[in-house]
Length: 192
Image (cartoon, rainbow, N blue to C red):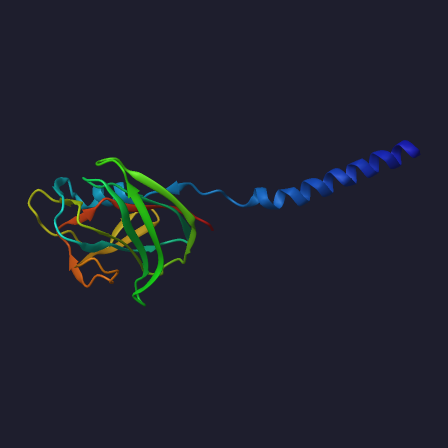
């Protein structure tokens, strides 16, 4: 009888341990995605021109996540070095700054990835990511024609490309559909 009680206690303890630890294991793990390559594929922006020391601009892409998620890192590549590129993530509707980060581009034509404290993004909310630089790659179609937005790139839908001249952290007011100046993007991970 004593052996039966011992076995029963071990069995109950095992079941309790497994049921408590399985809560975390039941949640799916989503892969991290960077939507920039899919964006360029969808737009057909394959013609590249380098602009170096070409005047300061605040420019970037407006986007909407189609799922709840988070930005884990910012990625950037430029045709010239720059130790302090300001990158801003905006609330598109309020035109307010959500987050500012500074990236060091130590080597031209090499993508830099900066991990940031995770930034939660709401499903179907409009955001914008911009940089302020006087160096960039201009990417467009060979015939310089417009693309039709929105552009779906995985779990991110790009709404438009915007820009404004100047070094100030100002929400861009000009919209262009025949090019993108980049390469600025982010690592996104769905959370539910």
